[in-house]
Image (cartoon, rainbow, N blue to C red; front, side, top):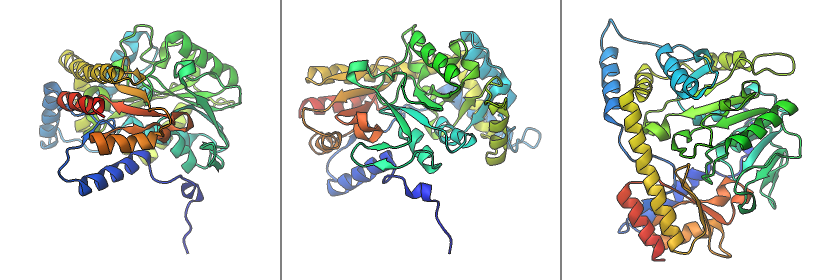
Length: 405
Protein backbone atom coordinates (compact mmCIF):
# COMPACT_ATOMS: atom_id res chain seq x y z
CA UNK A 1 0.00 0.00 0.00
CA UNK A 2 1.38 3.43 -0.92
CA UNK A 3 2.15 5.94 1.81
CA UNK A 4 1.61 9.68 1.85
CA UNK A 5 4.19 12.31 2.66
CA UNK A 6 3.51 13.09 6.31
CA UNK A 7 4.80 16.63 5.89
CA UNK A 8 1.84 17.37 3.62
CA UNK A 9 -0.51 15.85 6.18
CA UNK A 10 0.75 18.43 8.68
CA UNK A 11 -0.68 21.31 6.64
CA UNK A 12 -3.44 23.21 8.41
CA UNK A 13 -6.63 23.12 6.33
CA UNK A 14 -6.79 24.43 2.78
CA UNK A 15 -4.79 27.28 1.29
CA UNK A 16 -6.05 30.69 2.50
CA UNK A 17 -7.32 31.97 -0.84
CA UNK A 18 -8.92 28.63 -1.70
CA UNK A 19 -10.90 28.86 1.54
CA UNK A 20 -12.04 32.37 0.65
CA UNK A 21 -13.03 31.30 -2.87
CA UNK A 22 -15.18 28.47 -1.48
CA UNK A 23 -16.94 30.76 1.02
CA UNK A 24 -17.65 33.35 -1.67
CA UNK A 25 -18.90 30.74 -4.15
CA UNK A 26 -21.30 29.38 -1.52
CA UNK A 27 -22.57 32.88 -0.73
CA UNK A 28 -23.15 33.68 -4.42
CA UNK A 29 -25.01 30.42 -4.90
CA UNK A 30 -27.30 31.21 -1.98
CA UNK A 31 -27.71 34.87 -2.98
CA UNK A 32 -27.82 34.98 -6.80
CA UNK A 33 -29.48 38.41 -6.83
CA UNK A 34 -26.52 40.15 -5.11
CA UNK A 35 -23.46 41.57 -6.85
CA UNK A 36 -20.28 40.74 -4.97
CA UNK A 37 -17.20 42.94 -5.39
CA UNK A 38 -13.85 41.32 -4.67
CA UNK A 39 -11.02 43.28 -3.11
CA UNK A 40 -9.58 40.07 -1.73
CA UNK A 41 -7.18 38.23 -4.02
CA UNK A 42 -4.33 40.27 -5.49
CA UNK A 43 -5.31 39.66 -9.12
CA UNK A 44 -5.09 42.48 -11.64
CA UNK A 45 -8.10 43.67 -13.63
CA UNK A 46 -6.62 45.93 -16.31
CA UNK A 47 -5.97 44.31 -19.72
CA UNK A 48 -2.49 43.78 -21.13
CA UNK A 49 -1.07 46.93 -22.69
CA UNK A 50 -0.69 47.46 -26.49
CA UNK A 51 3.10 47.06 -26.56
CA UNK A 52 2.91 43.76 -24.69
CA UNK A 53 0.07 42.51 -26.88
CA UNK A 54 2.04 43.37 -29.99
CA UNK A 55 5.04 41.40 -28.69
CA UNK A 56 2.82 38.42 -27.91
CA UNK A 57 1.26 38.44 -31.39
CA UNK A 58 4.66 38.73 -33.07
CA UNK A 59 5.99 35.83 -31.02
CA UNK A 60 2.95 33.70 -31.84
CA UNK A 61 3.53 34.35 -35.55
CA UNK A 62 7.16 33.31 -35.15
CA UNK A 63 6.06 30.05 -33.54
CA UNK A 64 3.98 29.33 -36.62
CA UNK A 65 6.94 29.77 -38.95
CA UNK A 66 9.31 26.87 -39.55
CA UNK A 67 12.30 29.20 -39.75
CA UNK A 68 11.59 30.95 -36.42
CA UNK A 69 9.89 28.19 -34.42
CA UNK A 70 11.19 27.71 -30.84
CA UNK A 71 11.10 24.60 -28.67
CA UNK A 72 12.36 24.29 -25.10
CA UNK A 73 13.71 27.54 -23.69
CA UNK A 74 17.27 27.70 -22.29
CA UNK A 75 17.46 26.71 -18.61
CA UNK A 76 18.10 30.22 -17.33
CA UNK A 77 15.83 31.88 -19.89
CA UNK A 78 16.46 33.54 -23.23
CA UNK A 79 19.44 35.88 -23.24
CA UNK A 80 17.40 38.74 -24.72
CA UNK A 81 15.18 38.82 -21.61
CA UNK A 82 17.91 38.22 -19.04
CA UNK A 83 19.98 41.00 -20.61
CA UNK A 84 16.99 43.40 -20.49
CA UNK A 85 16.37 42.51 -16.85
CA UNK A 86 20.01 42.94 -15.84
CA UNK A 87 20.28 46.32 -17.56
CA UNK A 88 16.96 47.83 -16.46
CA UNK A 89 16.23 46.35 -13.06
CA UNK A 90 19.77 46.21 -11.73
CA UNK A 91 22.58 48.02 -13.53
CA UNK A 92 20.51 51.21 -13.88
CA UNK A 93 20.08 51.15 -10.10
CA UNK A 94 23.77 50.56 -9.49
CA UNK A 95 23.34 46.87 -8.65
CA UNK A 96 26.10 44.46 -9.69
CA UNK A 97 23.95 41.67 -11.13
CA UNK A 98 24.95 39.81 -14.29
CA UNK A 99 22.46 38.30 -16.73
CA UNK A 100 23.84 34.82 -15.96
CA UNK A 101 22.69 35.23 -12.34
CA UNK A 102 19.06 35.63 -13.45
CA UNK A 103 16.80 32.57 -13.72
CA UNK A 104 13.59 33.15 -15.69
CA UNK A 105 10.56 31.20 -14.47
CA UNK A 106 6.77 31.05 -14.63
CA UNK A 107 6.32 33.37 -11.65
CA UNK A 108 7.52 34.44 -8.22
CA UNK A 109 4.99 32.24 -6.41
CA UNK A 110 6.52 29.09 -7.89
CA UNK A 111 10.05 30.23 -7.14
CA UNK A 112 9.22 31.23 -3.56
CA UNK A 113 7.80 27.77 -3.02
CA UNK A 114 10.66 25.95 -4.72
CA UNK A 115 13.77 27.85 -3.69
CA UNK A 116 13.76 26.32 -0.21
CA UNK A 117 14.35 22.87 -1.75
CA UNK A 118 18.08 23.53 -2.06
CA UNK A 119 18.45 24.04 1.70
CA UNK A 120 18.82 21.35 4.36
CA UNK A 121 15.67 20.28 6.16
CA UNK A 122 17.03 21.28 9.57
CA UNK A 123 17.44 24.96 8.67
CA UNK A 124 15.32 27.30 10.80
CA UNK A 125 13.24 29.83 8.89
CA UNK A 126 12.28 33.30 10.07
CA UNK A 127 9.22 35.05 8.67
CA UNK A 128 7.53 38.38 9.12
CA UNK A 129 4.22 37.96 10.92
CA UNK A 130 1.81 38.55 9.18
CA UNK A 131 3.31 36.89 6.12
CA UNK A 132 2.45 35.68 2.61
CA UNK A 133 1.23 32.12 3.39
CA UNK A 134 3.30 30.42 0.66
CA UNK A 135 6.55 30.99 2.58
CA UNK A 136 5.43 29.00 5.61
CA UNK A 137 3.28 26.42 3.84
CA UNK A 138 6.04 25.30 1.47
CA UNK A 139 8.41 24.88 4.40
CA UNK A 140 5.74 22.83 6.16
CA UNK A 141 5.67 20.62 3.04
CA UNK A 142 9.44 20.23 3.39
CA UNK A 143 9.15 19.14 7.04
CA UNK A 144 11.14 22.12 8.27
CA UNK A 145 8.62 23.77 10.62
CA UNK A 146 8.10 21.37 13.53
CA UNK A 147 4.75 21.04 15.29
CA UNK A 148 1.79 23.39 15.13
CA UNK A 149 0.55 25.01 18.34
CA UNK A 150 -3.23 25.50 18.20
CA UNK A 151 -3.13 28.11 20.97
CA UNK A 152 -0.49 30.38 19.48
CA UNK A 153 -1.09 29.60 15.81
CA UNK A 154 2.66 29.09 15.37
CA UNK A 155 4.95 26.31 14.17
CA UNK A 156 7.55 25.25 16.74
CA UNK A 157 10.60 25.59 14.46
CA UNK A 158 9.64 28.87 12.81
CA UNK A 159 10.94 32.18 14.13
CA UNK A 160 8.06 34.65 13.88
CA UNK A 161 8.91 38.34 13.63
CA UNK A 162 5.76 40.21 14.70
CA UNK A 163 4.90 43.24 12.55
CA UNK A 164 2.57 45.31 14.68
CA UNK A 165 1.24 48.83 14.97
CA UNK A 166 3.88 49.48 17.64
CA UNK A 167 6.80 48.77 15.30
CA UNK A 168 5.23 50.27 12.19
CA UNK A 169 4.43 46.80 10.78
CA UNK A 170 8.12 46.27 10.01
CA UNK A 171 10.05 43.14 11.08
CA UNK A 172 12.68 43.50 13.79
CA UNK A 173 15.99 41.62 13.90
CA UNK A 174 15.24 38.34 15.76
CA UNK A 175 17.05 37.33 18.92
CA UNK A 176 16.58 33.62 18.12
CA UNK A 177 18.96 31.82 15.72
CA UNK A 178 17.66 31.49 12.15
CA UNK A 179 19.13 30.33 8.86
CA UNK A 180 16.64 31.36 6.14
CA UNK A 181 14.98 34.78 6.45
CA UNK A 182 11.97 35.71 4.33
CA UNK A 183 11.49 39.43 3.70
CA UNK A 184 8.82 40.91 1.44
CA UNK A 185 9.17 44.64 0.77
CA UNK A 186 6.90 46.33 -0.11
CA UNK A 187 5.02 43.94 2.08
CA UNK A 188 2.09 41.69 1.35
CA UNK A 189 -0.24 41.99 3.29
CA UNK A 190 0.56 45.12 5.34
CA UNK A 191 1.64 47.41 2.48
CA UNK A 192 4.64 48.72 4.42
CA UNK A 193 8.15 49.00 2.94
CA UNK A 194 11.65 48.93 4.41
CA UNK A 195 13.86 51.94 3.80
CA UNK A 196 17.43 51.37 2.64
CA UNK A 197 19.04 51.86 6.06
CA UNK A 198 16.54 49.40 7.59
CA UNK A 199 17.17 46.79 4.89
CA UNK A 200 20.94 47.28 5.22
CA UNK A 201 20.66 46.13 8.85
CA UNK A 202 19.14 42.86 7.66
CA UNK A 203 21.90 42.34 5.11
CA UNK A 204 24.56 42.99 7.75
CA UNK A 205 22.80 40.62 10.16
CA UNK A 206 22.55 37.84 7.56
CA UNK A 207 26.21 38.13 6.64
CA UNK A 208 27.26 38.13 10.29
CA UNK A 209 25.14 35.07 11.16
CA UNK A 210 25.84 33.25 7.85
CA UNK A 211 22.11 33.23 7.08
CA UNK A 212 20.43 33.74 3.72
CA UNK A 213 17.69 36.26 2.94
CA UNK A 214 14.97 35.35 0.44
CA UNK A 215 13.84 38.79 -0.65
CA UNK A 216 10.45 39.05 -2.36
CA UNK A 217 10.39 42.20 -4.52
CA UNK A 218 7.13 41.40 -6.36
CA UNK A 219 5.74 44.88 -5.65
CA UNK A 220 8.82 47.02 -6.28
CA UNK A 221 7.12 48.84 -9.18
CA UNK A 222 4.76 50.46 -6.68
CA UNK A 223 7.48 52.16 -4.67
CA UNK A 224 7.22 55.96 -4.70
CA UNK A 225 9.42 56.77 -1.69
CA UNK A 226 13.00 57.45 -2.89
CA UNK A 227 14.36 56.11 0.41
CA UNK A 228 12.87 52.65 -0.25
CA UNK A 229 15.13 50.38 -2.34
CA UNK A 230 13.67 48.50 -5.31
CA UNK A 231 16.18 45.68 -4.90
CA UNK A 232 18.05 44.22 -1.95
CA UNK A 233 21.20 44.44 -4.10
CA UNK A 234 21.15 48.20 -3.57
CA UNK A 235 22.53 47.32 -0.12
CA UNK A 236 26.25 46.65 0.27
CA UNK A 237 27.08 43.01 0.92
CA UNK A 238 23.79 41.63 -0.40
CA UNK A 239 25.49 39.52 -3.07
CA UNK A 240 26.89 37.23 -0.36
CA UNK A 241 23.64 36.68 1.55
CA UNK A 242 20.54 37.32 -0.57
CA UNK A 243 18.31 35.72 -3.19
CA UNK A 244 15.76 37.99 -4.87
CA UNK A 245 12.37 37.01 -6.31
CA UNK A 246 10.70 39.14 -9.00
CA UNK A 247 7.41 38.98 -10.87
CA UNK A 248 5.78 40.45 -13.97
CA UNK A 249 2.32 39.77 -12.56
CA UNK A 250 1.59 42.94 -10.62
CA UNK A 251 3.58 45.53 -12.57
CA UNK A 252 2.69 44.41 -16.11
CA UNK A 253 -0.53 42.47 -15.47
CA UNK A 254 0.94 39.02 -16.24
CA UNK A 255 -1.17 37.09 -13.70
CA UNK A 256 -2.75 35.21 -16.60
CA UNK A 257 0.43 35.08 -18.68
CA UNK A 258 2.87 33.82 -15.99
CA UNK A 259 6.42 35.11 -15.96
CA UNK A 260 8.93 35.92 -13.25
CA UNK A 261 12.56 35.44 -12.31
CA UNK A 262 14.89 34.75 -9.42
CA UNK A 263 18.34 36.21 -8.89
CA UNK A 264 20.97 33.98 -7.27
CA UNK A 265 24.39 35.71 -7.19
CA UNK A 266 27.47 33.57 -7.73
CA UNK A 267 29.01 35.09 -4.58
CA UNK A 268 26.35 33.43 -2.40
CA UNK A 269 27.95 30.30 -0.90
CA UNK A 270 27.43 27.97 2.04
CA UNK A 271 30.01 27.31 4.78
CA UNK A 272 31.82 24.81 2.55
CA UNK A 273 32.15 27.27 -0.32
CA UNK A 274 29.42 25.69 -2.49
CA UNK A 275 27.70 28.16 -4.81
CA UNK A 276 23.92 28.28 -4.40
CA UNK A 277 23.82 29.50 -7.99
CA UNK A 278 25.01 26.13 -9.30
CA UNK A 279 22.56 24.23 -7.08
CA UNK A 280 19.60 26.31 -8.23
CA UNK A 281 20.75 25.89 -11.84
CA UNK A 282 20.76 22.11 -11.32
CA UNK A 283 17.28 22.19 -9.79
CA UNK A 284 15.97 24.58 -12.44
CA UNK A 285 17.27 22.45 -15.30
CA UNK A 286 15.94 19.22 -13.80
CA UNK A 287 12.44 20.29 -12.76
CA UNK A 288 11.60 23.14 -15.15
CA UNK A 289 11.57 23.22 -18.94
CA UNK A 290 11.66 26.98 -19.23
CA UNK A 291 9.09 29.75 -19.52
CA UNK A 292 7.55 29.80 -23.02
CA UNK A 293 9.22 31.88 -25.72
CA UNK A 294 5.98 33.84 -26.22
CA UNK A 295 5.87 35.00 -22.59
CA UNK A 296 9.56 35.88 -22.58
CA UNK A 297 9.17 38.10 -25.63
CA UNK A 298 6.29 39.82 -23.83
CA UNK A 299 8.56 40.28 -20.82
CA UNK A 300 11.21 41.85 -23.03
CA UNK A 301 8.60 44.33 -24.31
CA UNK A 302 7.98 45.49 -20.73
CA UNK A 303 11.46 47.08 -20.76
CA UNK A 304 10.98 49.02 -24.00
CA UNK A 305 10.34 52.77 -23.62
CA UNK A 306 6.73 52.26 -24.69
CA UNK A 307 6.31 49.31 -22.33
CA UNK A 308 7.71 51.30 -19.41
CA UNK A 309 5.28 54.15 -20.04
CA UNK A 310 2.35 51.77 -20.26
CA UNK A 311 3.08 49.83 -17.09
CA UNK A 312 3.66 53.11 -15.25
CA UNK A 313 0.06 53.86 -16.22
CA UNK A 314 -1.09 50.53 -14.80
CA UNK A 315 0.71 51.16 -11.52
CA UNK A 316 -0.77 54.66 -11.31
CA UNK A 317 -4.27 53.28 -11.92
CA UNK A 318 -4.03 50.80 -9.06
CA UNK A 319 -2.38 53.27 -6.70
CA UNK A 320 -5.24 55.71 -7.33
CA UNK A 321 -7.53 52.89 -6.21
CA UNK A 322 -5.39 52.45 -3.10
CA UNK A 323 -5.77 56.14 -2.27
CA UNK A 324 -9.53 55.86 -2.73
CA UNK A 325 -9.74 52.89 -0.35
CA UNK A 326 -7.44 54.44 2.26
CA UNK A 327 -9.28 57.76 2.24
CA UNK A 328 -12.71 56.13 2.38
CA UNK A 329 -11.82 53.83 5.26
CA UNK A 330 -10.41 56.66 7.33
CA UNK A 331 -13.53 58.75 6.63
CA UNK A 332 -15.59 55.80 7.88
CA UNK A 333 -13.61 55.74 11.13
CA UNK A 334 -11.32 52.78 10.46
CA UNK A 335 -7.64 52.69 11.35
CA UNK A 336 -6.02 51.91 8.00
CA UNK A 337 -2.43 51.62 6.80
CA UNK A 338 -0.42 50.91 3.65
CA UNK A 339 -1.51 52.04 0.20
CA UNK A 340 1.52 54.28 -0.34
CA UNK A 341 4.31 52.04 -1.66
CA UNK A 342 2.13 48.99 -2.26
CA UNK A 343 -1.35 48.23 -3.65
CA UNK A 344 -2.57 46.82 -0.31
CA UNK A 345 -4.54 48.41 2.52
CA UNK A 346 -4.19 46.93 6.00
CA UNK A 347 -7.03 47.91 8.31
CA UNK A 348 -7.89 47.24 11.93
CA UNK A 349 -11.15 45.37 12.44
CA UNK A 350 -13.81 46.89 14.72
CA UNK A 351 -13.14 46.44 18.44
CA UNK A 352 -13.67 42.87 19.59
CA UNK A 353 -14.28 41.48 16.09
CA UNK A 354 -12.08 38.73 14.69
CA UNK A 355 -10.77 38.98 11.15
CA UNK A 356 -13.01 36.14 9.92
CA UNK A 357 -16.04 37.70 11.62
CA UNK A 358 -15.26 40.92 9.78
CA UNK A 359 -14.94 38.93 6.54
CA UNK A 360 -18.46 37.58 7.08
CA UNK A 361 -19.78 41.04 7.96
CA UNK A 362 -18.39 42.63 4.79
CA UNK A 363 -19.62 39.79 2.61
CA UNK A 364 -23.13 39.65 4.04
CA UNK A 365 -23.84 43.34 4.62
CA UNK A 366 -21.73 45.04 1.96
CA UNK A 367 -21.22 42.19 -0.52
CA UNK A 368 -17.51 43.01 -0.51
CA UNK A 369 -14.73 40.41 -0.28
CA UNK A 370 -11.44 41.02 1.51
CA UNK A 371 -8.84 38.83 3.21
CA UNK A 372 -8.86 38.02 6.95
CA UNK A 373 -5.59 39.02 8.58
CA UNK A 374 -5.38 35.82 10.64
CA UNK A 375 -4.81 33.93 7.39
CA UNK A 376 -1.41 35.63 7.16
CA UNK A 377 -0.25 34.60 10.63
CA UNK A 378 -0.89 35.09 14.36
CA UNK A 379 -0.13 38.84 14.33
CA UNK A 380 -2.65 39.29 11.52
CA UNK A 381 -5.58 38.62 13.83
CA UNK A 382 -7.62 41.75 14.36
CA UNK A 383 -6.63 43.09 10.92
CA UNK A 384 -7.93 42.79 7.38
CA UNK A 385 -6.43 43.22 3.89
CA UNK A 386 -8.04 44.95 0.93
CA UNK A 387 -6.39 45.13 -2.49
CA UNK A 388 -6.34 47.99 -4.98
CA UNK A 389 -6.37 45.66 -8.00
CA UNK A 390 -10.08 46.06 -8.74
CA UNK A 391 -11.55 48.31 -11.40
CA UNK A 392 -11.96 51.96 -10.50
CA UNK A 393 -15.77 51.76 -10.54
CA UNK A 394 -15.84 48.63 -8.37
CA UNK A 395 -13.36 50.15 -5.94
CA UNK A 396 -15.45 53.31 -5.54
CA UNK A 397 -18.62 51.25 -5.10
CA UNK A 398 -16.97 48.90 -2.58
CA UNK A 399 -15.78 51.81 -0.46
CA UNK A 400 -19.27 53.33 -0.56
CA UNK A 401 -20.77 50.03 0.60
CA UNK A 402 -18.28 49.69 3.45
CA UNK A 403 -19.09 53.22 4.58
CA UNK A 404 -22.77 52.28 4.63
CA UNK A 405 -22.38 49.41 7.10
